[in-house]
Length: 229
Picture 1 (cartoon, rainbow, N blue to C red):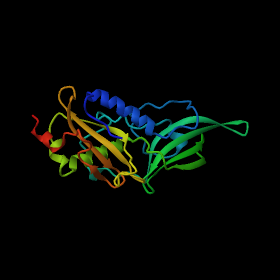
Picture 2 (cartoon, rainbow, N blue to C red):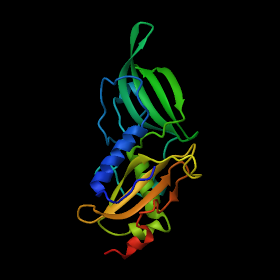
Picture 3 (cartoon, helix red, strand yellow):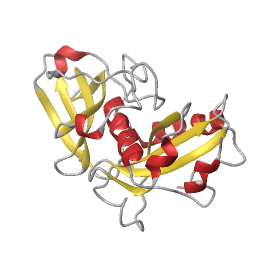
Picture 4 (cartoon, rainbow, N blue to C red):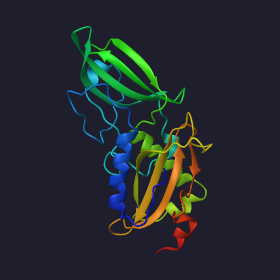
């Protein structure tokens, strides 16, 4: 899917990105009893019965999401938990309170769903090979870092007063860099007082930690953006 700068202002583009992110996340099996807040920093501890709800990134650089970290500082675990919420399953005419967890398995390049009883005991697990999943704050920090450190993008993103956005997935079967087992994400950067000036639009694969498309889309400003004041 191609996301175009024109004729949208960047605020409208960001709203569209949020809707795409919601579509990319794995669908729950049932209605959650507790809805997680978006943009929450992912927890580092383990034990589903102890952590409560969790949600993916809001995708906008700010207090919880830095655009200035170096990629060498960011090492992702083998399994990154993206979303967690409490639910109740109906099984054999009985209600079973559970905690449902969606995660990305970086060792295998696939989304997974893990279900636990409320005391933290494993209930079930399944792969979600068709799901691209949402992203966490730390994953987006890595995407921003890789974009800033790219040889061709670096000079463009060295400007001051830039705004970094992201958090929505890109997967295309005909794209050798973002097909099966990829973890590609859009990185969009704007400038100007209201973020109205397009600066960059890149695709980054977090599985390989590479920028797949530094100047994505026919309307992407590209290297000429360096000429802007």
